[in-house]
Amino acid sequence: MRIGIIAPPWLTVPPQAYGGTEAVIDLLARGLAEMGHEVLLAAASGSGSPVPQVPGSFPPDPRHLGRTQDELRHVLNAYGQLGGVEIIHDHTLAGPLLRHAGEGIPVVSTAHNRMDALTLPLYAAIAERAPLLAVSRHQAGTARGVAVSRVIHHGIDAAAVPVGTGAGGYACFLGRMHPNKGVLAAIQVARAAGVPLRIAAKMASAGEHEYFANVIRRELGGDIEYVGELRPGEKYRLLGEAFALLNPLQWDEPFGMVMIESLAAGTPVLSTSRGAAPEIVSDGFTGFLRDTPRALAAALPDCANLSRADCRRSTETTFSARRMVGEHVEFYEECLAGKHGPSPDRE
Image 1 (cartoon, helix red, strand yellow):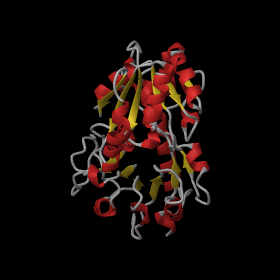
Image 2 (cartoon, rainbow, N blue to C red):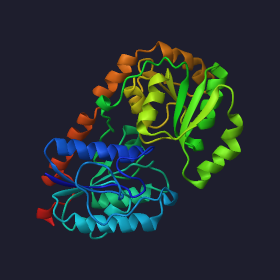
Image 3 (cartoon, rainbow, N blue to C red):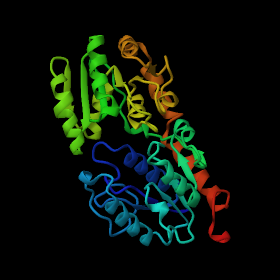
Image 4 (spheres, rainbow, N blue to C red):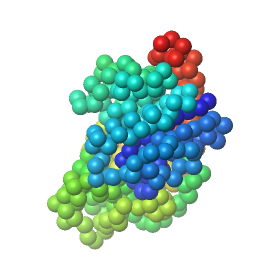
């Protein structure tokens, strides 16, 4: 197949540091190409994904994350360059809503955001124009009134992630410096359990910087250390030497790439049971799911007793990139056969 992929414009593909959606898109694009498909990627300029990329893309500006103008000019350029493909997989919000999107080419959309009062009307409109994929069963279950065609979990190339020993004697937190990611809760749980905590977090927006300055900074010191935003190699070293990833989510995250990244490094995950966490973490096997600060603190030391080999194995099977790519190929083929939404032959 000749497949066009449109990434969001905010970060390069793959991301230089934090960026779960962009990492998944890179894995998908490379995996499709390795299977022999022709892939054309529309991503922010400067992207290092090895597949061919459309000309005319714009440089990313994380300061403008979510700005409508940036996304619209990106998708307009993308659709203008993808006329020769057989199917388009659009990972933006604005793209599938364009009246001329695809111009007779089947378009597939993936919902990367939570289904809530703000996004539900947008995804409902998208689903009327293009088959909509969800990234977890929980996300699909919250899509009230929105037609979700299929759930395809994210995957990871475990072979690219070194397995750590977990011998660093610390737990780690990895994510954005945002209240809903549970940074403060992670500090409180680690302190209650008497466990050192290393925090690696992205701070890009003004709100993230303010949250760090006004809430998190005063919690640091002693065994609680902020190590900054890490690049992939540094991130996997942090995860690999941790005996647990402390991920006390304070919101219903649609997926949570950090959890499968941790499992790929052999590191168990301790999380609240919100969002997709129960679909990723096997309680008592690859981590623990607990919903109160006391229960999280009690379970944290027990993570050191779980099998790191079992954690790794889950990403080589259930959450492998090969599985993810294969499920997308199957869905694309069904779309081209006219099983999901309009096809060029029926318009």
